[in-house]
Length: 284
Length: 316
Image (cartoon, rainbow over all chains, first blue to last red; front, side):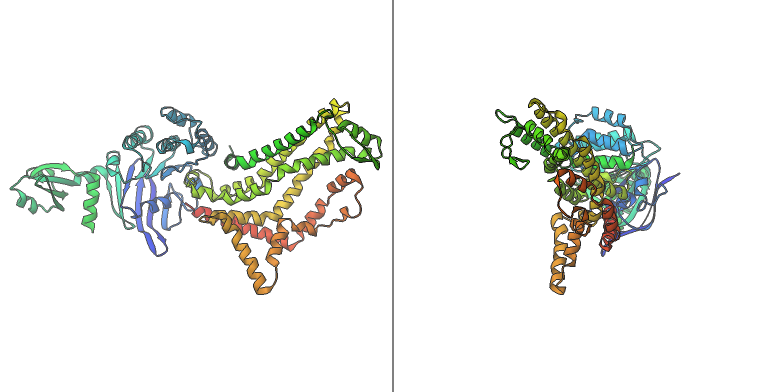
């Protein structure tokens, strides 16, 4: 399968601080990849390198191009929303569309206008006069109407309300994503994207701790609410995390047969946020 | 659409206030003043105490005065005099020009960093080279042509108003339309401005690199370093070469031009006009390209522009 992103030993320092420490990463076409990590883990640094927004050491190819040298060319096939509300405030929504239409060969204006028509965003208002949610809708309309291979979203919904965030991801999944595109997302609201992701990348202290297929990963981690009296049996299977809720012990297992765990009590798959937490704890 | 053209258009829209509205407002102001001046009571235009043929001419209205000039030996000077009058009135439009150029260059690579829109611009397939050059082009060349355009419209409007005035007063409207002189003036402005801009390019590109670099207070970052250098030079060496260099590049280079065309008395507007237009453009070019200071400016401009491009590449 064609890789959209290929990084080998990707590093980046800011003075004495090493933000990325030799990252190896392959991202294939047709995936929705969540990059999960704490603040300052290096997510944005890595994405900025991929987008040609910053310099780096190591080997990095995005769609076969070197982003630090060929950003302009790369942006024919790559779109991104870094941070909310980066649209120029002095432009009217229609000016934004005019500009992108003039500059981007793969922009479908009719599609963008159709998207905006389904919202309550006025075309003739300046971006300055729009709410934060509206600005994101305009930006989303732009990127969804560009026929790109890679879309990078770095905290695209920060500070927006939950209904809007749900709509945002639904639109992305239903109207944009297909097997010819890859979407890379970072967000703190992990639980909102976990059901649209196909892959995850865990990053900590400038290193990639785990890359996994979502389906595979969630099958690996099972949480058991252990029936009282079976604690010893449960302990013997080697839980990676122990806790309690509602007075019962809850054990988390990795790569233990689910059927076997069912005999210990009620089982459930672990959410991505919890998987992230246990993985980080296990690593540390 | 051509990418560079689209970028220049965007710059124009961004700076429309200074690029278009300011000169248009100034032109309207001048038109207003002229119209009010024309609408006198009784006489439409009254010119008191004009000396014609060495005699006190008394009170004339515009048409009478023109008839008077036409019947005198200065008759052939009339069209040039009218054209020079339009120029003079048009100058008001240009009052804002240096400020608009200065501040649009100073904000060109700063504002986009401040409001983070740079992240949007960089998500588009445009290179930093194109971006920086488009900004420089709009702030220095584009703005000139807009101001020139506004001036042309203003001169035509003035010719209309004054022409109508003369017509109403019973004169010949065409006396107020020295078309050939007007057009010559517009055309000659272009190469002269280009030469002037080339001399001032190190100043312009300095403003751009400051705009790409300064974390805030761009004005201080632009002005303080040269001022400090000038003071240090004065204190350490007792010389003023930096100040002189800067002055030379702003307008001081005109001092070096051979002004033989202007030696001796200028006999009337027609001669003034012809001397201005015989103004040694070619001499100016020759003088410039044989001047080390000119070339040092070109080299420095190249370095500053390169620096601005490199800084923009790294800016987020």
